[in-house]
Length: 404
Image (cartoon, rainbow, N blue to C red):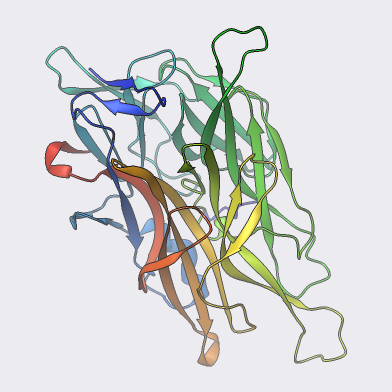
């Protein structure tokens, strides 16, 4: 449960989108948005204000930086950079388009959750107009997954999540709510033989990744676990989690209210597609101040939660900060970047705290990269919060950059 602080694309024979205006398969790079620690850093009390700060987004391969940008997306010859949320896709029943929430703020009662749809007009210029989405709480994530757009809403009063789905970017349908906080939606597909000898069928699995609090009465601190919700039609969702303070994967999305990029989906090879969620492993540590006590600490260390089905997850450790009484780390965001000459790669950010004198915490963030969700390498580290990840065109000079 989060804490409340206040013309287009065609398909090739592998069903991979091809951008007609580029003439090639999408070749993407990561866009990393970093937020400064805050005026009171490194005190923990300042954490709630991090996402109220001004981010700077970095194009990881081409090197450009963009002040005031939180997320980006590319398509139709454009790259749209947003202070709020944005995604691009080729929906099943409609034209390729962007869906954005330009006025988005991470805290309830702030900003605007209104959605905008961006399409090419007759002059082949990007034109914007309002689109639906839904009500049912605070918008916490906006994404495109395989053939549909998903707007995820969290209701604080009911501690429940509702996902609004659009297969054309215009008409939105709301599924039944499920308990606790969901997050961003990703999807994989496989081709299945038809029982009656007809053409192979495309079967899509949609997964939302959020978190759910645990019964922390028998430990010294508080922990949350990964909450997943799976759908076969993109409309109705079945949620699940592993229960227990030591059960994995662990999460800490609620610290920053950052549910916008919790999970990604991508191809490991032609026959294997996986989901990767930013997460954490857990370590039980006895209380040194009370050696006889049976009430321990449960500390987090960054890990990637990996699944092929969305219902069963393995937590993969990374070579980051090990868990200790005076130090923790946890995954914050994940994305998948498609590459022109290969399947692609996953990116994941984390955040680390090392407690020093007088209880002050020295913060660090690390960016990791993996070709398959299992082997992760460090790309960069610094003291800003590496809070969000999205995928944009690798060659930005071939696109028109628009800020919204």
